[in-house]
Length: 439
Image 1 (cartoon, rainbow, N blue to C red):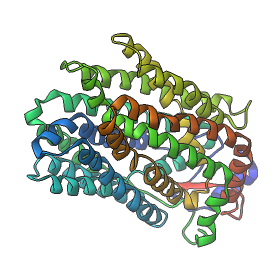
Image 2 (cartoon, one colour):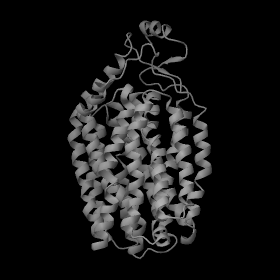
Image 3 (cartoon, rainbow, N blue to C red):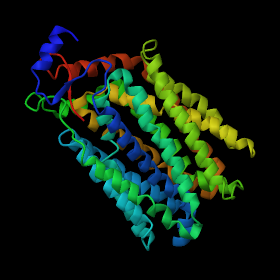
Image 4 (cartoon, helix red, strand yellow):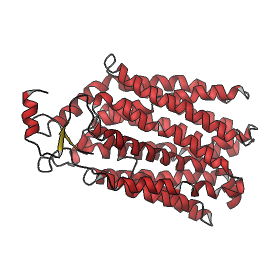
């Protein structure tokens, strides 16, 4: 630490911590663990619906096209309310927003198992979407403010490792109960969700700089997101990926049944493969992006793009591969398709200034779901009803190829956009030194 840095630190209130270029804030790991566990429950709640989609359809007497709207209704609420909570998170305590959201979606998840009509089930999915909208765009910004740029790829990879693990647990939990008792799959998620939500209210969220020094955020700063090539290109690629994988994940249990995998172990096996392959890919992808950053300035884009280009033919292969070889090809495909998770989210964090970062994540959530998996489940259901699930999966999987190509295009912009965001953050303090509040 230089003499100027020491002097700058002395000029700041005692409840603000000096952050060096490679050192996370005190308490960062505890905050990361709590947010990771919440993210785990987030995806458990989402994928339980996929595991019990067929029993729900039979009980309420609706088609696969109708059950596809259960996923879409959740995503409509999620994407519409994410920008609202993103704007709030740029102004008030983020931990309070997260806590309220977790409690709300946990109660609504339990309500999903208790409703007597399909219409009310749609309503519960809407409430879950609102609750998760209070969490989705906010949690990554808390983590990004606690860890420096050099560590974000790895840390966000660990955070997003909850996606495959939580999704897999959702399939497993949903498959634990007989079809006539699918309601209990939703009930069991309520207690852990309420406990984790309550813990958030005991966390403190302080501003990055003294409130008197914090610059006002105006419309021009939000519009600057659309003028940042790395941000917009990353959003386009993530949208294409989400369109394909969101719809495929929702109907995968039904697809396995259509291919004769009706045994009670089929869903848990699928969940286990997704968990292991997705966890390995998410963590290794984030570490790889960090490691290559010094050699290839566009490493996060390159890692994301190449993994999708490799994953596309592997996914097509699973549609024609017989069992039991299907499971080995599926493992390889899932590994490639999850490899971008850490790098793509790191791009969002690194190319946006901290004052609008929550809104940047929220707008990303709105776009990738509005044009992605809010559309694909009904599309897959419609195509499958007229042809078969194999053709439906093949049609939407083209978006995987598109996402890979788009990510490769963005590589040349990443270094300049990251530097611009960092310089903008540094300019928020007259000393040129960045300070962050305690977690």
